[in-house]
Image (cartoon, rainbow, N blue to C red; front, side, top):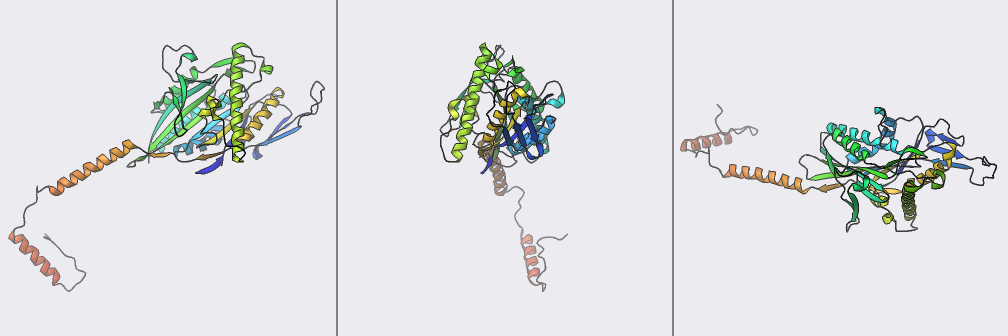
Length: 416
């Protein structure tokens, strides 16, 4: 078990008019915000003038989806194929590009996000790695107003999200979280997995807000389980990969949303507040200042327990919009990302004995031993030695013993 910090990358949404207060140094992984001393209306601004943040990598405005996949996702997937749990989650204000990063755009093939690219890469690796047999299972969970729903339900009677099966949390004696009523679907080829992704996306809650024409109003987790086993082995490696699109934070006073949109925004902000509490608690636990981490405050933090401070390799993608009106939210996202980067996870290879494989191997060994025993006990084809055979054998032994060459071979039988 090796402790490693959560890696954090920051993606900047393309903008025609980026704020002059924003600058970045891509090679150094640094983002910097410099605010003016006075605000546009002439009031004195007494807040900190310069904010500098350093991350594992900066994904600038012109970065391609393929480059994001290579930098962010590929190392995590390689670990998953080796039996190590992985999580990639996107965090940022609404409209900053989280869903585009995780799921992608629908207009162009090259706009595919991390999920479809991960699916394609996994099946390519399954074919290439001939030393083991791989199996892929998929679930799709949506957390809306702190209630979980199975997006891959095939109930024909469902006309809205609330008609889908509600997912419930269950915790076992060892503290492991189990998701009841969340379907697990086997995907035998990439097309099967992509069809499941499309099915889930059609059930997601999306609404138009002042900040985003198609704002996702919930947290979504696309979960992939990868099982692998080698020939003549009784063990199986089981790793899970979470690809998480968190709903965007928004200031209700700024967006002016009302009614159901306001209710959704409150639930979103509250769950993100609980997420921040967990991040702060984990940092304090690492310094010995506290022991308890409030994972149970929300469904989202409960599901992400392993991803945050547990048995997992985790990567965060922070997203930022850098227009003047969004600078405050971008600075807030950077502060959150820096706290996440301080968290240490302890990832291990998830390997266990598979009873089915063990039983299959033992049955094969029993069958082989029975065949050997049958052969040893059988007299079929074995003729008794005649007096002539015994005499011939004795002559060969005497001839061998009478040779002077100590390295001579003993020929037992006819040479013709």
